[in-house]
Image (cartoon, rainbow, N blue to C red; front, side):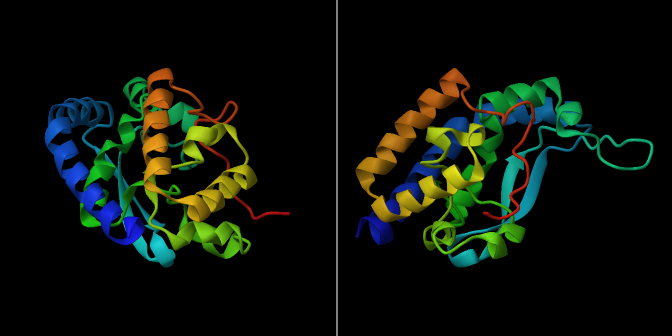
Length: 201
C-alpha cells in the first residue's frame, strides 16, 4: 500500500508545497545562472524511469557550453562556473526536478535516473533499480554519492528496491539534508562528474 498509494500521494503533495516554498530560491538561482550561462537556465536530458520508460529530467544548468579550437566541449571542471559550482555543492541544481515529481516521472526518494545507454549494460541485479520510480535522492546518494564506484552504487540501489519502506525513505531524506549541509561526496576524485559506466566486469 505504501509503494502504490501512500508514497505517490506524499510525493505529489510534498512537491506542490516545495514549489511554493522554494519559489524565491528558484528565482534567485535561476537569474544568477541565466546571467552566468548567457541566458541558458535549464539543462534537460532524457533518462529512463520506472520500467525503463524514458522521460526528460530537469536541472539547473551549472556548466557553460565552452568549446576548444576543434569544436569539442571543454572538460567539465573548465566549464563549471563559480555560481554553478556553488549551486552543485549545495545540490540546488536538483531543485527543478520538483516539477518532474509533480508530473509523476520522479519520486523524492529512489535510485537516481541515469543515461539510457546504460540500460543494456546492467546485469540482472543492477537492472532491479528500474523496478521502482527513480528519485531526486536515494540510498546510494547518502552512502557515498559520486565518491563510490558504479558497482557499489548499483548494489545500494538494488538493496533499496528490496527494502523500500516509509521509515527507510524518511531516513534517506534526513541523511540527504545532512549531506547537503556538509557538501559531502559531490565530486568523484578530481572530476566534476562521475566517469561513464561501461558495464560490470
